[in-house]
Amino acid sequence: IRGPAGPQFFDSSEQAQRELSRLGQITDRRALDVGLMQMNLHWHGHRVAEPAQLLDPQINLQIAASILAECVRSAPRDPELAIGRYHSWREEAARAYGRRALALARALKRFP
Image (cartoon, rainbow, N blue to C red):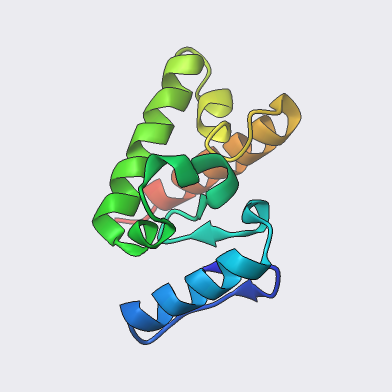
């Protein structure tokens, strides 16, 4: 969970669920990112019945893949913009994120 105080990691799912519930009562949903793929509750909380479901790695990754597919469909000939839209739909922010993600992918290809 990433909230106003920064990222938090927990020893158990139960601890994470309790903290997510607590933060959900005192924090603006725009400030809460949950799970492996950091689903923002403001933008993607509607994709689950309960925010705690985003702590399940399988659910989190399935939703992230769905979001990324939506982004790619929105700009099928522009990988930088498509990938960047996973982070933001504002063009400047999306392009900056997309450039960083593609540069990281290119760097990782150098390793066997």
